[in-house]
Image (cartoon, rainbow, N blue to C red; front, side, top):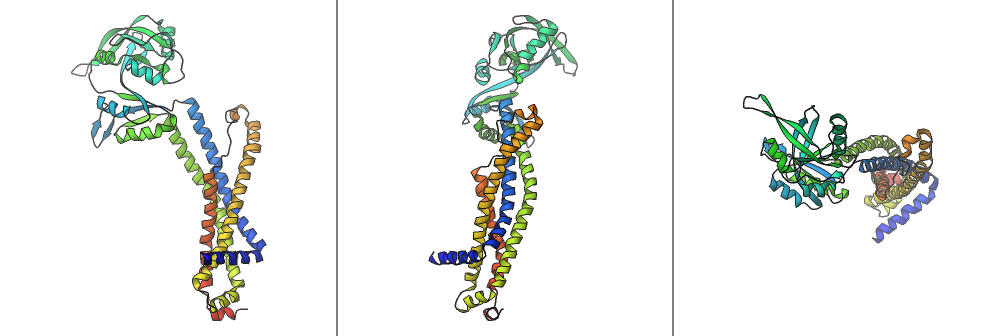
Length: 404
């Protein structure tokens, strides 16, 4: 430890003799680090804006689970699967669903979703503009807002009305057979702005009975207690061999896209880092050349080759620290300018198109990004110093002493 401190003091003394050269070299590294920090922070800012927009426009805590085919075997949705999903941590509620397709006499398509009343309440917390959820086993249905408006406008069907629907079956030969059923609109949901507006809700057992089928469920709706836990719940569902879909997939798409964008832009920033690394190599090679006689004398009086390498690498370490700190500072300055001047300019040029993002920062610098930038500067400086260090350690002491 004491020897390492001696190396640090000797290296610092050498750097003080050529402060301007070292500063310019460190600035070369700093520019590359600032470019990387700036690009990543800008990408994170755009990513945050996109995800926040998805959160505001979508129901992230609702997941739909469906069966899948694995190794040629169909994994159906059964009561046991429902029980397993309900036992998943952070799965607040889960309800199986059975779907059927009906049509009115005027050929208005109705996608009917069968679900139990208690599950429907727990999952969607619906608000009724009129009526209530159908009685178990009855022929009553609840109309989503958009469906209710369509039936009212084109077919004169209102809440409380009895209307006829057609169900298409097929005989043993595959020929279509239509049968008619009477349904009553027991209630209408308030407008929600989501998929529920286009649904026709019915008691699950009633839908299965009317469809004349007794098969497994089509899917399971799962409500997660907090959007932050959605991905962990999705992971548990996938471990059961089932497929999970929902608004969270939009976030996954945003993350994949932004990762590619940041990677692509970082390749250009890497050019600055390569130039900075070459500057370090050049600076240290020149330093070794200028100090050849001094290195030879040191080796002649007992300094080992590892001592010489350590001294050179310690100087590179200092350059990396200076470059990393300067790079982080320049990255923060770039982010600040982008969030103040850049945002104002975009709002002026784009007007209402950009107004939705006005409350967010364009660039987000996290502690992790700064630490990453600093570590890259230090590691790159040490790697750049390997060649000059080995070159210095390979000097012959006798020839080095006679160097002029």
